[in-house]
Image (cartoon, rainbow, N blue to C red):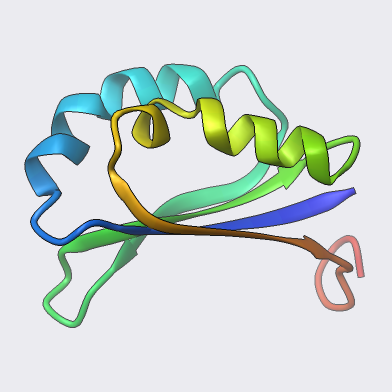
Length: 92
């Protein structure tokens, strides 16, 4: 099943994001991520992350999100995880 992980950074977390990016990218490479990338604010600065993850169930998606080096480092102010049923696109 697909899950959307929507995470918003803490204010002024740019340095922390940059410092943990290599570990985050290495971590993500070990999973079935359909789509992912940084969210941008009105000025084009990174302010969060969005990941569309293929996972067995909600518990597996939550475990993925909790173990992400960004989350472990305390980058995120808020994380929401929801199931996704594609209706448009290649899987729709």
